[in-house]
Image (cartoon, rainbow, N blue to C red; front, side):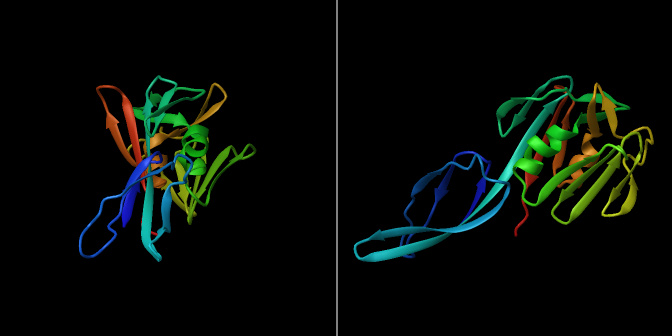
Length: 199
């Protein structure tokens, strides 16, 4: 049985017998689960029997940023970030540390890390087998060692330092980290969704 988990309390429905189906609801506090796939069993004991039911849980991550606002929503829970996202050259920029570290990439996703090199002024993001390298004021990034222009239509789109904070172009960074990105022009909101792949 497979469950989709939005990193908060979820309900699990399990079929117990082949002859008929019984619905049982379990409350699982998954707030601290990393995004990913979890396999386990639910064990029932009674009437001199032990019944084990296999369960698979897939946890996803939802994030919403708002241009000009320090409020960000993570799975519908509001958090405050130190610097607000902004628009530059028609592209959304977000604080790198909040996107990568205190939000899902480090906190929730497995096998992830972010490294800042002050000498090269470079951000390195490692997620699983993917390595992303971005340099301040440089429109060229590297994905697993291969050079790629951040925005093929505009070479003025590159990582920036603003008020002492490092900002990355959102769509390029997020999509390369596996997020689906949606832009809502009416509210100037950026919605990110991360769905784990089957492991």
